[in-house]
Image (tube, rainbow, N blue to C red):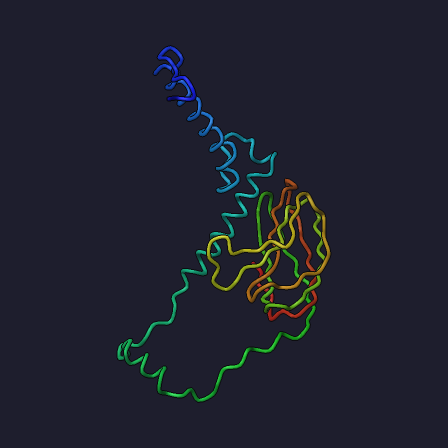
Length: 215
């Protein structure tokens, strides 16, 4: 015995109605792809809607970070010499005692630097600090026009979504603060010029970092 009555043929949607619903869903999905997904993920904005919403900038930053990660992954790794073999390497690792145990590198001494870069309209550039996990750095920067920025860190061999953002903003003329590196790697700023003219960014940093990486 059924608790509910089965629908009649007249109550079921017709083939025409199903096709129309499918077409509407496909059009809506395509619109979301073009207006939201492409700008936010790849920095491609065919409709022009993504930039006022900040989606295009997000996508451009993601693509830049992805390009840097790909460049890091493309660095060739050390390979065994012609006369070496995998069994020999395993044997050596088991029975040959290393001359001296490796110890972690000491933290970098505190230093202070001032770095200046010039950005053309819509150009984006990065300045990074080479830092060990737990190292601290204080900073202040000023720009002669409005810039969008992202303060983030990347490990030496980042995978997908490995970058960590400490702070970001839009239309800024300057920021100051302090951060602690959450992993060994490069930590710093990405700026993009949104002023419509050439501008200069001046960065002052103090902290425990080994070197400054700049364009």
